[in-house]
View 1: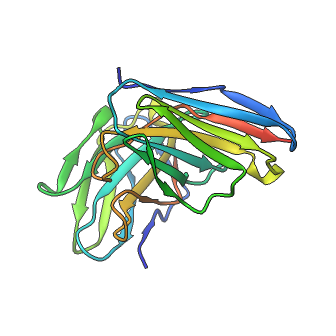
View 2 (view 1 turned 45 degrees about the vertical axis):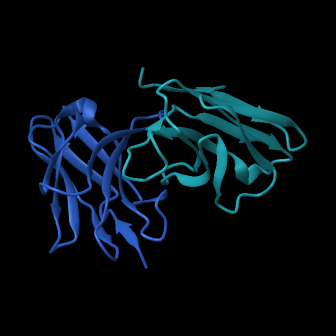
Length: 114
Length: 114
């Protein structure tokens, strides 16, 4: 199984809402990532988890809160977002966080903040 | 400063003709180079990578890329384009200041016409 799944596919939320994005992989990968992608732009790294521990936070605002409950799951909790946070949120995984290992991406969650 | 450039926003090619998507990089040291493809409303898919070894790298779906150190290039090629190859292509290079981060190019949209 070389698939990364993400739910939901689409999410519309108001600026006062709390919601969560979910990501799952069953490839035994030890590194998992969250990216943000604006339309027609490359993805921007947000967080890196390595062996279920937060390894890297790319100076992401605290209204985004990642969580890794176990080695297969990655969540992104959202609270008090701004309209400019509307984007495609991509989850990825790789065998290890060393960049020589290719990353496998999920289909993404398209988030709209109203 | 490290960077990767994709000089063409869009490449148009007729089905059956060879295609080239260009990528140049600027990094210190030995680069790790990657190509990813993104189909509409999907996540990125890994195509191929160059870490070391043979300068000609073969990847998924009949794509290949040639690492040229003197020209600091890593162009993506395919001998015969398919309409289904139409997508957004990203070149990426390892961020030499970290072991975990990729620097993505701005992306090139490939349009293969029947």
